[in-house]
Image (cartoon, rainbow, N blue to C red; front, side):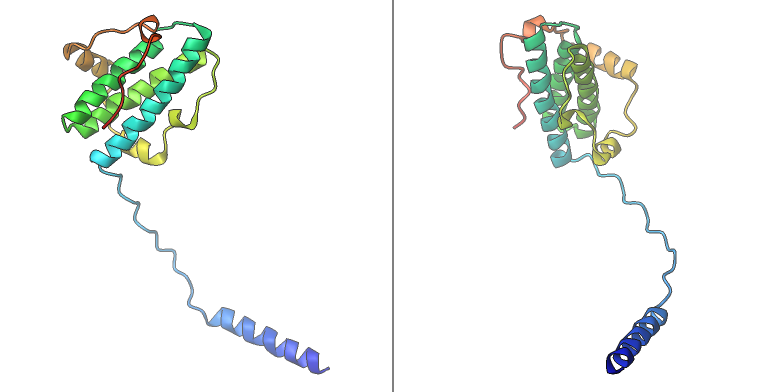
Length: 164
């Protein structure tokens, strides 16, 4: 009987405590602002794309299926690196994003499984929002005089994508 009374008192106090709490209001928190395309964000973006390029390079090297997508990936990433080094971080991210898209196409053509570096995180999506169209990026990179690259020409060595 003593235990029953103690249990009842404990249960009653818990239920009273639950009702005594303030009712939570449904105040929505403001959405977090998109990350600003500054040097550290751009550097991380380009490094991740560079690692992904290495994975794509290995897949094409192993299967010898040359679609031209690896060449385009390296072309765009090299240009993104130039923009990064010139302090044009937002533009570098746009070209690096397009490079990853070419890399994904290259992996698909070669039957390889993409790594997590090929996927865009929510922060990366926010960083690259407002990107120009693919056609506009192509016009820009062509006007800048970036040479077309073939997959075959990249099989011999270093892709030249290291970020310092």
